[in-house]
Image (cartoon, rainbow, N blue to C red; front, side):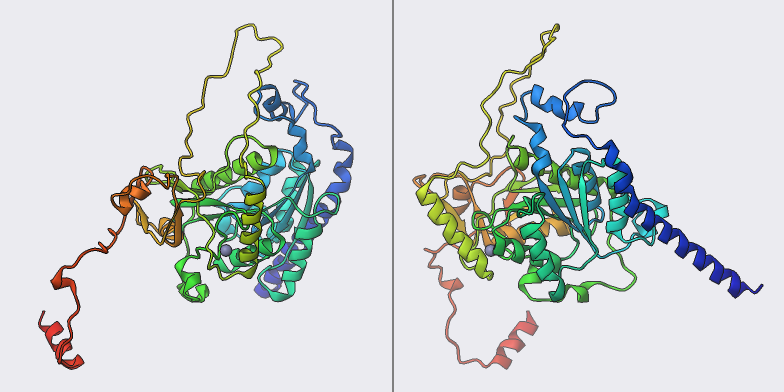
Length: 444
Ligand SMILES: [Zn+2]
């Protein structure tokens, strides 16, 4: 037998292994039907997978935890952040998860969480579905091994968002865990068109920064309202990638971003706490900037403008009361022999949430105290429109004082003094030609 024959046999064995795994995956839901749990029980026994989640009710955090089974969440991109996000929601007992990805699992992904070396070569959605179904057979998993940025796939993506819910209704939330701007813009377009809320997430190429952003069409800035420079300049991002150079990634940063994403998803779905509009994470300084970005009235997305109009009319009709807190229930411990009670944790941390919608400081530029690429994206977002919670009637001496930036933020440039009449700064007419001016410049 030649060396070539041996290689061929190896390839065939590898192919059979993958086929076997795929078949196992398609059969596993049927096998696990009998293990499905009809009702989430709060009974404190070792065999109850939901006892610790249902305890959130007893602790007064969530009103009805079992509501989580009604919700359908779409995750676009099941890579470093998306796969961990999917696992967390599965363990939390979400009703239905719909996964979109067109990539395959590679050994180069093993520095991250979730996937295993034996799954290399499988499509990410197939490998994820196999693992998730085994973790919690109560969660309905639907997968699409497609690229939503292709025109032919976009219609299907829209259809799934409209009818993919548990009872054929529209889905409840979309989570973007993709690694490119084109896919983010596609999700943005779809969610603006359908007026569907979504969370955007990202991790920087140097692996030490990340962010999440909650986008409510019409109410907060969409991805096209304050696009990153690459998108605004209409540069093809594929041309920016250099051959042989790959982005860095850390399981830690991705785990933190996935944790923040799912935490805010749970808060949104189960109505507790305060949802962050934009929350950044700088691992080098353990710095978490948070802010609210208002929609851009000159957004390039026509559906965004339509949603902005609808939101304005809604606000006039009925004042918006976001992030409403549940009335404080007393913590219920049936056997509280030690008298344990919750400490007062009412210190407000999310200072940048806007409560006064009439105060907008346009075109101001704020810069975070870090020049890493992820935060540079933040700067681009902030530079279009930043909103601050300040009173309109405050006496304003200068723009910096007016904006009163959060801790950790500072201005990159001071605003031009509009009243300045310094003669030296004025441009004067001259008889010199362009060549004369160039010659003068060269001498400097
Ligand atoms: Zn917009």
